[in-house]
Amino acid sequence: MKALRNYLDKIKPNFEEGGKLAMFGSVFEGIETFLFVPNTTSKSGVHIHDSIDSKRTMTVVIIALLPALLFGMYNVGYQHNLAVGADPGFLMTFIFGFLAVLPKIIVSYVVGLGIEFAVAQVKKEEIQEGFLVSGILIPMIVPVDTPLWMIAVATAFAVIFAKEVFGGTGYNVFNVALVTRAFLFFAYPAAMSGDQVWVRTADTFGIGAGTVVDGFSGATPLGQISIAAKDSFHGIVNVIGEPVSTWDAFIGLIPGSIGETSVLAILIGAVILLYTGIASWKTMISVFVGGAVMSVIFNMIGTTVSMDTSVLDQLFLGGFAFGAVFMATDPVTSARTETGKYIYGFLVGAMAIIIRALNPGYPEGMMLAILLMNVFAPLIDYYVVGANINRRINRVKLDK
Image (cartoon, rainbow, N blue to C red; front, top):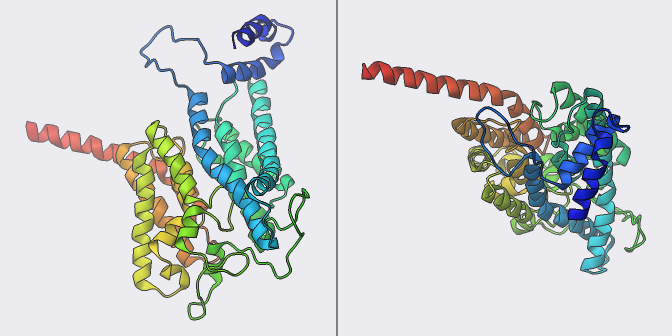
């Protein structure tokens, strides 16, 4: 590492003002600070000195996402093998999923980071690090057979119109990854809601058996619930018609978006985020509480299959757990006051279940719930701060 540090120090003058490669100064700075912690310090004012910076924070989040990502890769291969009736073993199953997911990660990063690099060069600013997490979130929340060009278009839209126009990292109102998902959902509904996008049945890489299964149905569990008639619904089934249990949903061996199916893997990531202090447990727990409370209320009404779905199934199925752990806790787009985090999280969870139960056209619910609450997060903080000020004023009056 010392040799690399010396090499960077040697070529750095070329990228500084007046150097022959000064126009690429932002690119060099981004690479340098990614490899090494910046050694610049504040010269005046009051500051808290800490070894962590935004790049290190993003790195921790990426590490927390790895269990869900790796399991999602395996599940892609598992669902394929289940659909075609093959069992090539654990390693080949994982490789199949890895090769299916990797191009999406590459496209997401190339497009998103490319735009951020270009914007930084134009504005002559440092490259912002926010997309390090968004770039891996985007492939994890889309169906496995989403065309790469769709991911590229949606990513470009989200980075430009949901982030850069607001000023970049730290200024965006909406979660960038969820805007990407929403763009895909509304711009290409046929491609995003069809059965086969949730399970890759075509063996593109020649490492599995078969091509496409006749009569195959890969609808997600929530998709099955949303269209089922109450008097004829006999439970969720997998791609070959076998019953899916709550335990299956917890482990994650079900059709769904790449990184959202395994609650177990997501909870491992939650432990990492909470242990390192990156995510707020108040927001995270409140989302689950809000979802559970609203599920109980709908269970008491019980006029549709969605309303009758048990509390555990509501929390385990779809992207609820993933959204609660990795999306709702986004420090930029969520509430920032301590009391506001409880309110924000509870409303996210409650709204997700309301959308699921009352609108069959949007069986997932979590994406829209978080985006909606992104809008109201500043308002929640505004009233929380106002209430605190009024409480202190009243306290002073009583003391007098």
